[in-house]
Amino acid sequence: MSSQTLVIIPTYNESENIPRIIDQLLGLREAVDILIVDDASPDGTAKVVQEKTEQYPGRIHLIQREGKQGLGTAYVTGFKFALEHNYSFVCEMDADFSHNPEDVPGLIEPVKNGEADVAIGSRYHNGISIVNWPLTRLILSYSANVYARFITGVPVNDMTAGFKCISRSVLEKINLDRIRSNGYAFQIEVHFRAYKAGARLKEVSIIFREREVGTSKMSKKIVYEAVWMVWVLKIRSLLGRL
Image (cartoon, rainbow, N blue to C red):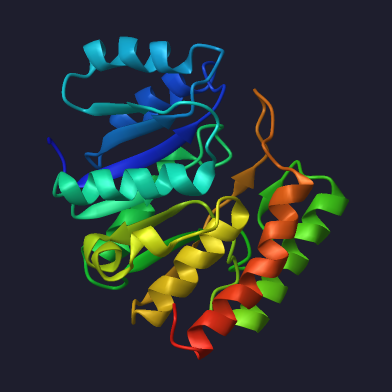
């Protein structure tokens, strides 16, 4: 381990994006290590990552999984890896450049200096900061976040944000084996569990850009999961079964 911070990036068919995002992350002033969790990408994403490990010895880790198992399980796998390898700060990030690597230090800083336990790269903290989304998707996303915040009571505007830095102490308090969500609902569940565990959540404004290369993983199934999962979390919390 060469850094206190691990950036987890789940991948499925991101061979065009992953080499560039690795280069940019490892070129930051803030030293980070990278964990790629690849779900058997048929486009050779894992092979590209393996080639990059030779360029950056000890800085890149790769977990290859059999089949497309989903976003949530990929992050849980990454969280467990981070705990096992004694990382103090753990970041979530997409592989498609919708999250700007240059924003990573700004998420790590408030967690590292003790201002927050979870720093969330927020699209809705100061207005709406999303580029190149169609209006229908923007309305759906914004409405979903208002809905999730209202039902769960978590004081976060961007409940489905997948760009964040989490303190190790938060991951130690959350029972990772009880996380059941796998799409955007996973992000809602992480924020909810962190909040209920007493974590301090801080939103940091970012500009979110729609991917330019590759294919979006959004589906109706992911949307439906987010709709019902907020109620599942709320009821479990009221019953003391979170």
